View 1 (cartoon, rainbow, N blue to C red):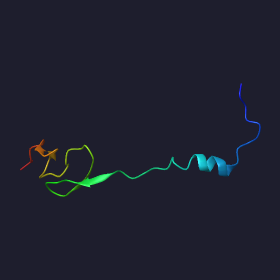
View 2 (tube, rainbow, N blue to C red; view 1 turned 90 degrees about the vertical axis):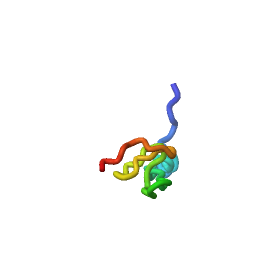
View 3 (cartoon, rainbow, N blue to C red; view 1 turned 180 degrees about the vertical axis):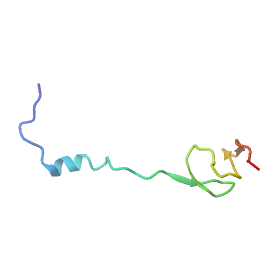
Length: 61
């Protein structure tokens, strides 16, 4: 069984974990109303409800 000969330093562990940070969501503007929404999501704006250029949700009014 492979066992490390010496302890990894905190610096080395930190370098290994440098890509594990939390990144913000990628947002883009809805082409119909301009609301910022995540990719591949129906626009949550009450008056919009569009996805991929089509009306998916009927407006409440």
